Image (cartoon, rainbow, N blue to C red):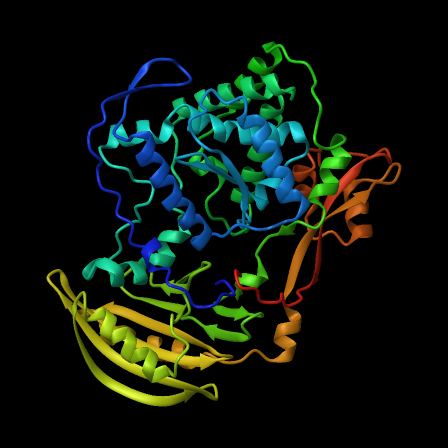
Length: 507
């Protein structure tokens, strides 16, 4: 949940991408063949711009100073050699702890901070970015749309609760769970992945980067995936979820890269050490500025509050909302910032007036109260639509000049089952105490200089590295039992006390 001034963000959640008018065939800039597509270049640009707004609103991009500038400069250098030049490419780092990279229609390309953390050279990153350029160049988004007769990039999974009423209200209730799956990131088939790999290696070779670096990166990524899948590391969308891989893909990339003629060109940084120097300070893992979960307890150090969600419920934390739901999707609780900063009752009145424009809503119980010593207002309401009746347990709480809206939602037939859970969650909202706030940590990537004959276990102990030996080996593309010569620079993860970030107009 972002530290932000309340803003109207609902339009990002209700984007319904209808089937566009038939546009016939378009020449593929990569193959030169005529491809059947349903999207004109203008429609692709418009769709990409809307999707980019969703990325910013739901995942968020980060300003990592020199590193962000470097990613953009590297991307522009590669894009100048793209087979497709009728789009304006842009490049940014997304606030995602998992290794991922993706492209949106119209040339919007993103790499995650999690992906940067496991990258070991400019050559590798160049191949990754060029791979995403390849998806745009080969019209993969438009070709997917043609096959499905409708563009699924921005659609979200239908869930039982929000689906009852649909529209803006249904989208608001379901938004966190759609975001959790990042359903607006297109998944590509193996054929498209192979094509994007080929384009990436061709572009990399033309610019003067080693095309075999695509294979070495994919190998590291596969090791990282295997480690995450085999342990207890929380996992959301990963690169290989949206970019299917097989061992043959790694092998093919190496074999093809070795056959491509290329000559080393100028680089933006000096060697691996220069590359790692840019990564130093990169945030790893969860971002405390968005709040953190400790089991079912959610704590937000910047907004200075804590709230408990029901035991056993699936929890989700996004830039726009914090939420929990039962496993069958029949009930959920959502915490958001109310667009208004008025008194809680005034916020409630405004909310009901807006909802009434879309659906028939009946407000039953209402009560002014205090929650954790903070002024609050509670109401129970029923929203009736042709598809069914949805009951809402709503609480508005004013804290630090912001108003938080907590919504418990369930169909009429099961509302009583979850009513106590809704009330307990809302009543658990409270200020953070000093000890809680100071206990929240963040982890940053640091670069350590190896000592002669040192192994990764000894280096980790000396540098207070939070990664396991296995994790350290993977992110540095080393073997677990590697003995270091003393000349190496090694990435490590170092925890530190989280310091509250000053609020900005755009934060």
